[in-house]
Every structure is written in C-alpha cells, then in structure tokens.
Length: 125
Image (tube, rainbow, N blue to C red; front, top):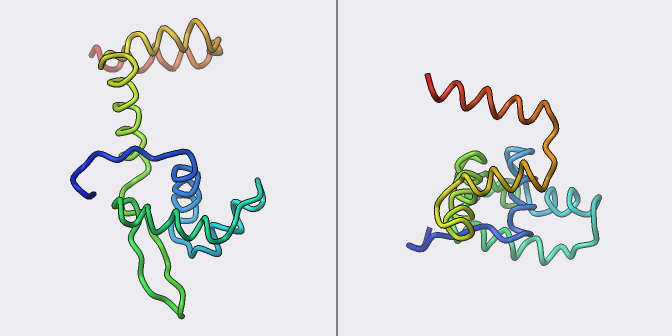
C-alpha cells in the first residue's frame, strides 16, 4: 500500500462498497451501479478504481478484454482501520468520547443501546 496509511475518501469508499457487495466487478459494473444513485462519469469511476488498485484496495485480472476488479482487503478490515484512524485523529485514541457522543447526540434506539451493553458484557467475561 505504498508505505503510507491510506484512508478511503468518500468516492473511494462508495466504489469499494459496490465491489464488496458484488465481490468482483468491471468498471462498467461499478459505473452502472453508482449511476442508479447519482450522476457520475465513467472516466471518474475508471480513474478512482485505478487509484484504489494503486493504494492496494483492489486487485485486477484480465477477462474478455475487460479488467475485473476484486477487493484486495476484506470490508471489515478496511472499516476497522478507518474507524481506528478516526478515533485517533478526532478523539486522541479513546473510543469512550465517541460512544458518549453517539449515545447523547445521535439518539441511539433502545435496541442499539441493548446491543452495545450485550457486547460490553460479553467482553467483560
């Protein structure tokens, strides 16, 4: 991954979500999927996918005159890295202020709070 820690930008994450969902995709597949939600240029998708390959998030293979891209890293691994980077950058490495913010500001549903409690209790054992 070019030696430096790379965090996905908005469009990059959007493209990765499509590829994780499809498991493998051509530029055309991703373009058509994104086009259902918003206007985007084919060349933009192609450029972004090349960048994601250079950053080590995608692997490509040649199939019937089109490149097929697959995730190089699992979705959970990438998201975990992004969350850790966010916590380090915004909350100086402590997850507690993030959880407090989510509970106080986002207004978590009772089921979400119950799930957090269940996970905490599971970790305490």
